[in-house]
Amino acid sequence: MYFQPEYTYHIYNRSNETAFKTRENYLFFLEKINKLITPLCDIFAWCIMPNHFHLLISVNEKGASNVDEIHRSETSLLSKNIGTLLSSYTLAINKQYYRRGSLFAHNTKAKQLNFTKHNYAVNCFFYIHQNPYTSGLVEKLEDWEYSSFRDYAGFRDGKLCNKELAYEIINFDKDNFYEQSYIILGENDINKIF
Image 1 (cartoon, rainbow, N blue to C red):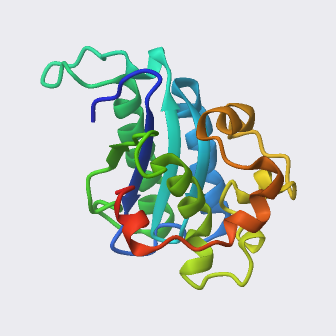
Image 2 (image 1 turned 30 degrees about the horizontal axis):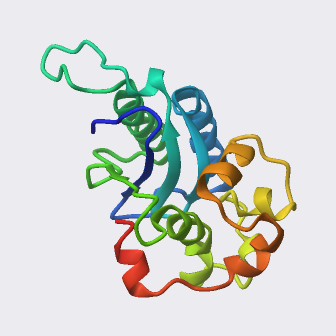
């Protein structure tokens, strides 16, 4: 994956099995995100589901900088750290559950979002938070602990997201965030963020 500074990306990956089985698994993954990813970008939204995750980020200069690798000289530091995040999490899960092999069966995707067309960033922001609700995991968005929805809705004071920058860049209605979060996106809008 190649990242450009100050661009916004929807990053996601999926497992073919349950990748997050316990609360400790989710929290461990979040600690890894905080250590490996937040120094390289501003996170606007995140959600970890039982078999996949989403991040909405804006990459900083450090994250977009190239790492000097023998076979992949065009790899950014953020891309390298995403790989480290997934491989270190997989190693921990393999050890914990006596399993072998890859946990995330697909390559991580990073879709650069265009702000001027079709409200991509706003739609992605709400889609990420709606994911547990539309998947039937919870009856209310705030019931899902493993997303940034609670932070924006005022139910928790999480530190992973740069909320002030998100308000400025994504330009969603801060005062009506809760109500707008329940306006379910249509399939056409969802397809444009992937």
